[in-house]
Image (cartoon, rainbow, N blue to C red; front, side, top):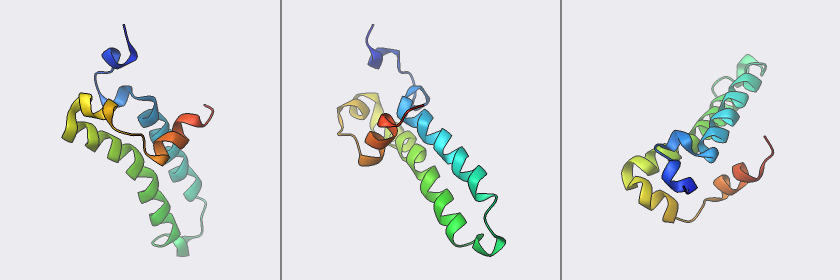
Length: 85
């Protein structure tokens, strides 16, 4: 059984899981930022972190599983795949 045949959803993708973990870490880290950054740097960092797993999920919904595996990986996907757990 190949890896692609076991993937039923974007949630099964390692890059999506790492993206979600990174987004959670960004939310936890930005809690300690000063309140005056709430609508500046905090918001920007949180939106950027959430956009990675969101784009992966949206891409699968729009294109389907076949297109998800045939497309070239994005730089963020390459970075997430290369980081240690």
